[in-house]
Length: 279
Image (cartoon, rainbow, N blue to C red; front, side, top):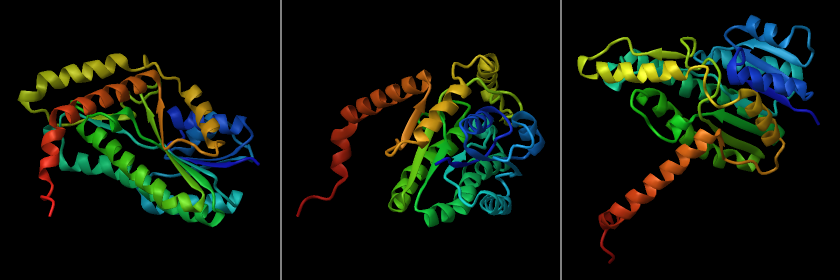
């Protein structure tokens, strides 16, 4: 049986390629984003298996309305892809409270709002699959990425916990951890830099921005291939809780495992001293 996909951030990048791949495979797609015209221009108007809906994930009421419209059209939702988000880059001290709040409003709370609106549909069906696009930034932090990485770490912990809460209803959860993919993510449409710049951080901030600017449109990851993999994972009876996307993502996790093992070996003997004495 063909599936109904609900995808956020579908107007470009990874979200658009997932929507395109699902349609090509004969699935039905609810493609959401702030610019529905861009969605229909990219995927074609008049396709009865495509429903393009306006959804700014920073507006919780829009999530509820979009889910209601999707169910009215297709009667069910089998796969949710939480893809919408952006990167707030820059040193933590350079970041304003408003920048912090908006990064969390979109990346974390927006993702949660969409999922909260959709889970009752999947629970009623007793089936479903929630994919959340996190990042290698949810596996390892980096200078100049403190806000972005913290939101992705939050989504990792949330996904692991949510998976345990909904497993009894036949709902799967997968955190997808992409490395650098060749989209416009490093362009101004998806990345913002802190407006303030403290002198002590200025030189390092400029190096970090130059690094990302040079990498834009040169990333190794292919979003078309990732979209095909997600379609495959959606058909698995026992899909992974975590899925690394890209050779660089595999390298990052290997480095983190090595770091964690080294710290445990060096400091584990001290860690166990904090327990109460056995009575």
